[in-house]
Picture 1 (cartoon, helix red, strand yellow):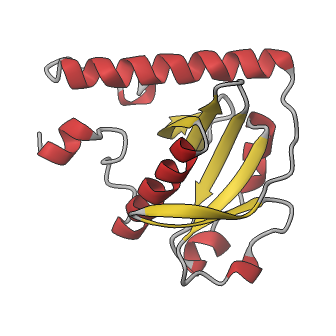
Picture 2 (cartoon, one colour):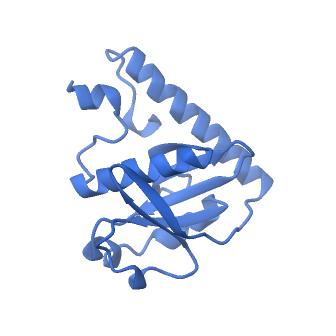
Length: 162
């Protein structure tokens, strides 16, 4: 296992481009500065996988969808399905992304590997209590299992659980 795999197993599964990894890193730093803890690549109950799933101290849940290129955005028609799993939905892009392509009814984060900035706040769509409880439990379990995988790398945990 490489050093990067040991330090961030959820990020290194071969599906993310270097640009997407940089955007994710900066967006997560921004989220942390705003009081949100985050996980990447989290499977949702509808079969989709959130690029970043974050939770605030008060329990608010945000999803950040990373777009590393125009082609990535144009080829993705699943992003509206994330809205039912978060209080706020954001796109995160780098500075070269043409921001006018992104839907105006979502938040906008511009990020690089060093940090990010929210250029447009996402509208709030409060989750139902049962969905919030299920997502909070999912965040806790995924986070705990990822920590276990770091503490005991010889364990063979199912990728879907992480």
